[in-house]
Amino acid sequence: MHQYTPTLNCMGYMTPSLDKIQEAFVEYCAINRSGLFVDLGCGFGVAALPVIAKGCQIIACDLEAKHLEILKEEVPEQNRALLTVMTGHFPDELRFPENTFDGINLSMVLHFFPPHKIEGVFHELFFSLKPGGRLFLTTSSPYQGALAPFIPVYEKKRLTEEWPGYIPNIAEYVPQRAHLLPKENIVFCIHELRRLATKFNFHVIDAAFFSREGIPPDLSLDGREYSGIICEKPADPTSAFLEKNKAIIPTLAAKIR
Ligand SMILES: C[S@@+](CC[C@H](N)C(=O)[O-])C[C@H]1O[C@@H](n2cnc3c(N)ncnc32)[C@H](O)[C@@H]1O
Image 1 (cartoon, rainbow, N blue to C red):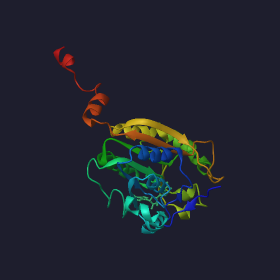
Image 2: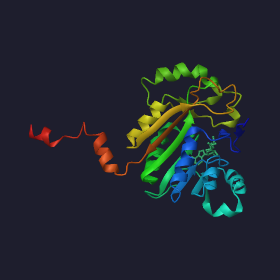
Image 3: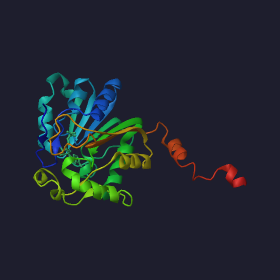
Image 4: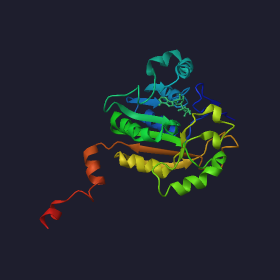
């Protein structure tokens, strides 16, 4: 069975194998083989490596240079030209021009941003995707065994707060794992992911809870341990904006009346 491997910079764990959202990312890259893809917070490259194996160009970014060294070692010599690595913080240090990417993978990274930065992250994701490009995103959900005492807190806050999954001190819930995680954490349900994506004019293709092969027993709950979303930047972002907001944009008919 695949094992969860701790990151080298106390940023949680590398996912042991592709989940269904990452699988969809790899398939999407393979279908659009001439495109340019990016894996933000790639870790050791659980998703970037199979994308390279499909013969696609990918930029792999991570805060931790040692993760990228390990990833590079795993790429066969004949495929090295397909990989570009970039060390730094997305989006504080790593930003990309408008309409750069055909696909973005952001797997198990969003929950490390403080709440006030999350919309900025979504703005950058939308901005750097080409029209028609897709975002594949996964994150922890509140429905994890170790977070059981937090679930009622989350469900109550969900009715009134913008970021109900915000956990100021993760050690309160997972003392046994706290040394491998940043102190602050934020977990998301698919509802928050949908809301965020829609707010930034993405077209949501799929949003689902899922579990993982090899999930440690203390995290396992009921199959909803992780949340994922696949969404697309509309081919014509202006018309998508108008479509979404047509209820509040005065129409000609309304003016005539
Ligand atoms: C939990 S691991 C997930 C790794 C991989 N994406 C996966 O799904 O297995 C989070 C990774 O994202 C990196 N990371 C976290 N925040 C980041 C940021 N703002 N910019 C770039 N990398 C980041 C960490 O260094 C770590 O390697």
